[in-house]
Amino acid sequence: MNKLIIGGVALMLGIASCKKPAINKSPELVSTTTDSLKNGTSNVVVAPTTDSSKVSVDNAPKTEDAEIEKVSVDEVDFKYLKGKAKVGIKSTDVNQTVNMDIRAKKDSVIWLNLSVPGLPVSIATAVFTKDSVKIHNKYEGSYNVYRYDHFSEKFKFNLTFDILQALIVGNRPFKKNKSRVIRENEYFLLKQHEGKVQIDNYIGQDKKLKKLLVTQDVTNTKLEMDFADFTALNNTLFPLSNLITVEYKSEKDQKIYQTVINIKHTKVELLDEPLQFPFKVPEKLLKKN
Figure (cartoon, rainbow, N blue to C red):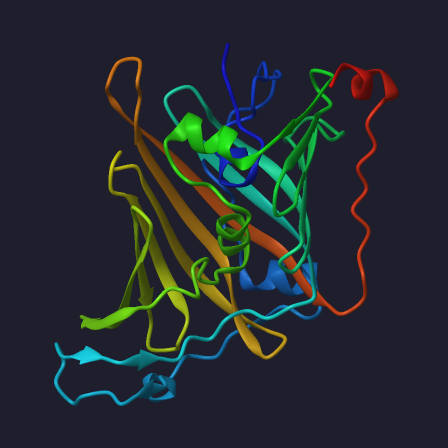
């Protein structure tokens, strides 16, 4: 049985306990062009070329390899987010593209609805809050509620709501930790620790997070996000592309496995007006849970 996962990072690592529907497998995503984005939403505009002078560094020494006390990072601020994306998933047993509708309330709720090319209806809907993940697998007719430690145990990695939100908007998931900042080539590297997890934030000259590398010290599980195609949106730069690589060791055969997820946002809106997060589950499935 092939598996896809629905759930935050876990959602895009495969669909949980799901037989794969007969769909058109296509590992390549269609390139998102400037024109198609403009046609998709009126408030997505191509960002101007960034100027390295916009980097805000407090108490920064003049030497290239010196430690920097503080770096100002431009975070995406929003009340509500609404968007569409194409997501390419590739692993040892999955190689396909899915369409994803996204809605979110900052630091509170993330709603995802999945469909696949060739099927006109939704195959799954998931709702993420700070403490739980609800998944309605419409294709198989199942409904499950998980805590995040379910996915953490499976992948030997501490998956959280904050990591999922960072995955979507390109913000740092760990902001309260003290940072040691150094200069590495064209980046400012903010190094952090969260328990036994090491976090490397690569900040570009435009003050945006360009790359996030999270490493679990004990298991050596790695999550890497590479953000690109930054576009001006509501007075900030928003990454329309995110290439995610997850690497972990299987307890069954002790081999290293890798999953690659390629997210291409085709439409994004940052809104002040509240959004609805529709999530209807048949009564018979609720009784089973």
